[in-house]
Image (cartoon, rainbow, N blue to C red; front, side, top):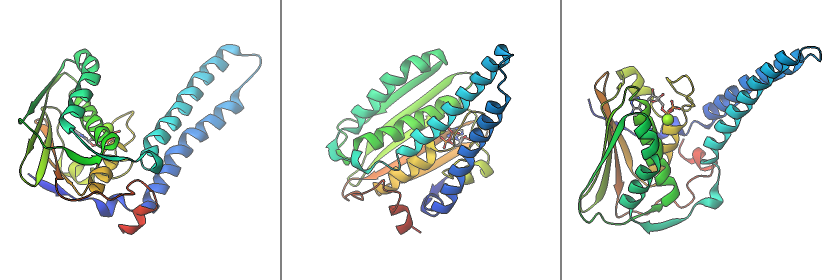
Length: 241
Ligand code: ADP
Ligand code: MG
């Protein structure tokens, strides 16, 4: 059930991405403009109700835009040598309170002396955050997330395993497509961003998943090749076509 997901074709379809963004933003805008027209001075209670929905819709647009900013913020890109296991531990510490609330146990097993990674620390941390978030969301009744970090002469391998809802073959095929989500409040941008970031570090992401059994994402990062130096310019998507 192992599949290598090199989604450069998908991720790079900038036209699809633009169409998706337009669609995702137009929906809440349509609803906002409809609600504004319903405002009525003589019914303040209804107005309050409309205001609530309008704020929710605005927040949704804001959230989508902030997720997309990861792709469009070249000035924040800074490559360095860093300890990725420390970054993983920091993410775990950050997410621990939410995990506790959800009855999720996060375990992290790391091989001694993992070599430093040369990469964009914020972006690689973002990948870990997105993956752990997805794992938590795949565990509606709680469960376990197992993280591991190992290395060989050539690579570092990070894995994120959950014993959650899992995926069908069909779902698995669509991973990394912009705006593909099975969640009521999902954006379907998290994994697309992960694929893009790992691709720019010349790494790969593999997934193993069985419905109702769980999912494992495995990220392999090469130790001896330099990342693409201008990774997040939307322009660079074109080159991958
Ligand atoms: P979102 O989380 O907003 O839905 P993502 O791009 O992060 O967007 O994920 C896309 C879809 O991939 C999810 O909606 C879900 O169907 C599937 N998915 C991702 N990670 C997991 C996981 N650990 N277990 C089960 N399904 C997952
Ligand atoms: Mg997600």
